[in-house]
Structures are given as structure tokens and as C-alpha cells.
Image (cartoon, rainbow, N blue to C red; front, side, top):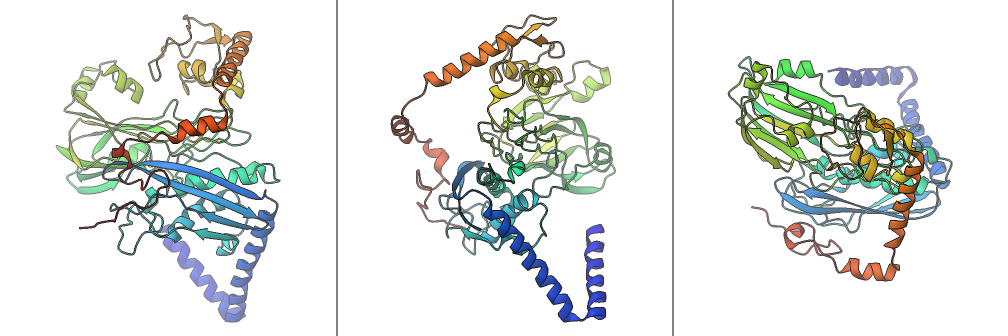
Length: 494
């Protein structure tokens, strides 16, 4: 209602201005706005580095089933012009994971207006210097009869591709401060329906993890934790108490998820984790709309790690309410505790977060994970003091501190033996690591660099082996012809 009121107020003001100054003045004013935006954008682009900048990002689903699909982008920059070429993107498919070219441009604009052109007028003029090449027959330029209802989710690829190419283009220019790794850029929603605790039929999607995606790390800083919704940067998460009042579930927890941000010299912002439990209702229909279970979309930049993968978890036919009634002290407060401790009785399903519709019973637990942002730069360049602070605060595990960041500690209350902790394992001593052992850390990082160098090979030799690799046939059902992604079979819709 507020947005509709704002749009109507704009209409009224324009009519008042036209009545006062005339229609020609209003048309000229709007045209000037577009022209000034184009001039400013061209001036800015001209100071970026000429070249061809490439990026490739993958999704692990077409919505109804797992499947590898690819988005490819080559940005060719010359002077004040940029060609955005999406050749190599997977072909159109028979699911709703398709879109049309103007949707691709719109999703790229989400990034461009927030970063590269953040201080310019929001106008089509800003995009006049960009040429879009989206090959017909790809999932970004599908036929007129294609299903496109999930075009925002398939454009998780676009909002990740754009920052990867533009960051390289802007690096070393006077706009270098806008360089950042991609945000989490995934849909992460539980869609639910049924009768709530007041007997009212209701259907909606839970925005808690959807609107709290981690921000990408930047040139000079870590990403923002739970920064927002990548498709609308002003998006906000539903208040927990409001959602529990209106909807038919209790929220077992809503946290920042440890280890979810991409590791790096600057770490991607953390995403969130939540567990929904139907309450005071016999059943609740639910499904999932998401990607990134097996392959993350929020990639790292310049050596930074991607965001964490995000499996779905469903626990059916649980004893949760009985445990709460008894006051048991082992009720999990994080997904890691829930998955590893198995303190809640019931049947555990570990699954893709793109979930088909099924029925959950009163007391079931439905876990939904958001995504962290991509990391920036080599993790072994991160200040050891920051690593120690992150580990002590539970933002990363001790395993991550030791195995990824190669930081060593001494003087904690418990013995810390490198390599003894498994990824994601509970770490009761995380709050008392002791202090950083500077000498041991320097040696560990020197050894890590030496190990990397020991595996180096001439590029031609590497390429020969790499080119012989091929995913299993089942993964390539919707990818297109291997390895170029060209359409290799007709699309049949029934």
C-alpha cells in the first residue's frame, strides 16, 4: 500500500508540474534525465580497463529435479562501450527455469545500479552503452512458449556473473572501491500452506532466510552478515514473533550460520539458518524454492572461497514437543547441533532444498539455510587476529581456522591438535582458543604455500587432463552439449 501510494503521489506531482509548466517542459525534463544518466555512465565506463572478462556460474537444479545448468558471460569492454555476451549458457529446457533477454538485463541492472552506477540517476540511459548478446535457444532467451515463472531463480546466475566480470574490469581504476565478490544470490524460501492455529486457511513463503543473505566480501572489508535480499537490496526479514503469531509454525531457531560465508583475506558475510516446526495444526503442506545444495552460486573473487553449500533437512514424526515439555537441555540451537547430535527423535531426511510439495505433521522440523556471500582474496592472507576473533565468536569453526586459514593457537583451556576436528563438528572449546601462536602460524602458512607450488604443472599439461574430465551423464541432462553447452536435443512440452 505504501508503494502504491508513493507511485500515485508521483503521478499527481507530475500532473501538477505539467499544469504549471506545460507538457513540453515535462517531456524535456524526463529526456534530460535520461541523457544525463547516459553521459555520466559513459564517462565512468571509459575510465575502466579495456579487455575481455569472463565468468561461469552453475546451478544444481531446474526446480523440479537436480540438474547441472550453466550461465556464461564474457564482458567485452572497449572505450565507453561494453558488450555483455552470454554465449555458452545452457539451452532452454522444459522446466520453468527459463527467461527472456530483457529479464537478464534487468537482473544485471540490480547489480549495476547498486555498485557501478550507485550514485547515478536510475534510468535506462545508464544502460545505453551496454549491448546485450543473448543467444536464441538458451535458457536466457527461450522460445515464446517457454515456462518462465522461475526466471528470478534462474537469474541467480546473472546476479552472480555480473559482479565477477565487472570487479575485474573496475579493478585498478578510480572506481576500485566498488569491487566486491557476489552476494549469496540464492532463493531460500520454505513455501507453506494450510490452516493456521486460528483455523484460518493461509499460504505464504517464509522470508527469514530469503531476506537475510550474506553480502559479498569487498576489496577492503568483510561482507555484511544477513545483509538482505539480493533481488531488492532494501528487502527485510519478517519479525520472528510476527511470523509465529500469523503462521502455523514455531521457529526453533533463527541464527547467523557459522562457516556460511566464503573464506578469504576478507570473509563473505554470514547467511542465516532457521528451523520451522508446525504447531497447533495437524498438518502443513510445504515445498522449497532454492538452489545451492550441491553447487554454490555466491562465488569468491581473486582467490576467495565460495559460500557454503546448503542442504535441506526435514525431521518427520518427532518427539520435539515432549522434549520441550520435559525441559530437556539438549534441544538443538543450530543446524550443526541438530544434524550431528540427533537429539530430536524422528526420521531424518537430508535433501535438496528445491523440495517437492509434501505434508509435515505437527512437531516436524523443517530446516532452511540461507547463503553467505563470496569471499575476497587468499585466506592465508587474512590477519590471524581476525581469524582468532571469528573462531572465538563462533563465526567459523576451529577446523576452519586451522585447515583453511592455517592459524595456530596456544594457551587455551583445552588441547588443540591440528586436524582433529571434523568440519561442522561441535566445538565446546571454541570460546577459549588461547592466543595466536605467531611463529607456528607463519610456518603453517609457509608450508601451505609450498604445498600449492608442489602441485604446479605447465598449463598445457593441466589443460589436457582437465579437458578429459566429464560429469556423469545424469548431471548433463539439461546442461546441453558437453562442453560448450549448445542445444543437443529438442525441447518437448506436453
